[in-house]
Amino acid sequence: MKPRKVRCYPGFASMLGRCNIEVFYTVPEMYLNKLFTCIECGEIVVIDFENPNVAGKTADQIAGDAVCPKCGKPLQKTIRPYPENFRTDDGQIGHFEPDSIIPPDSESLVKEFIELS
Ligand SMILES: [Zn+2]
Image (tube, rainbow, N blue to C red):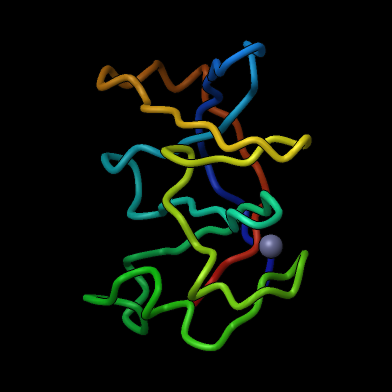
């Protein structure tokens, strides 16, 4: 698993008692990069579905026997689509649906995530 720079957009999620929780999301129109999270610790990983090694597989198939780079749990059990599911630093689980309107490029940013492949 290697770090990979990913172009994504910031989003702001709300949950009971908290708001403005920053999350990140990719849009399928740009690349076939999709973010996932380890629901046990909140680590974010990226899968590049253009990679021929992963084509046609689901995230838990791609996780295989890999463990989370942060908490060491088997990713096959803990991987969830992100930011549809996210874990906050205080251990709550939130949900965020990106707007279907894609923001302008100027709002995008580049973040580095571990690539699962
Ligand atoms: Zn983890």
